Length: 225
Image 1 (spheres, helix red, strand yellow):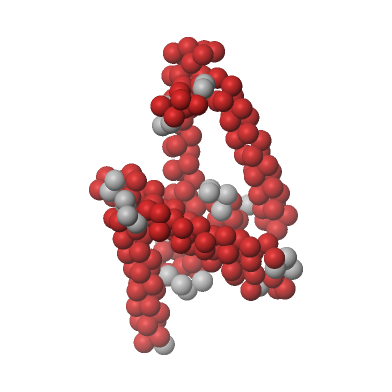
Image 2 (tube, one colour):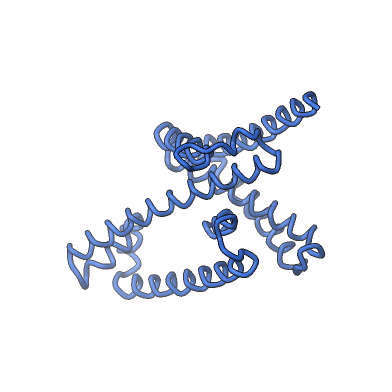
């Protein structure tokens, strides 16, 4: 999750056809190596009971044996910075998506407007993010976001499968991606519904709202024509 933001930045990337694939390969490989190293360090520093106890701050706890409380504090601060970076990237990516969709006439052209030299979608996304963060529980946001991401990934892979000849791609990879994302979505809903119905309802509400808003917008545009 998060790698899709690379594509959202394509309008601002020099020679995107060449550099975006490179960005994907480099970032995925780097993250895999980084996560494997982190896993080795964590398991080497803590036993499994300690990992289970400190599951919410396990990396900070893993720094304690070598660096003490200073290491714990450093990792905690680094985690906060990383979180801010992720939020910033998500908001930026979301604003670019709304801008591009509006340019393709799938959203009102007002979304292509700029405020303080930034797409208006950036401020809308930031406002909605703050609203959700301050009114919903974290677990509800997490589940709704996970379902949303899985569905988006499934649809992107499905489109990649359908347009494989046009984009000169491999049909098998996006087909597998579509199937696995779809299965993961169903499993997630089944698993979480008994304990987190609100999160599932929020996700369903967002999806339905998107379809309704798009339907109303398209209908209003047809009337103008």
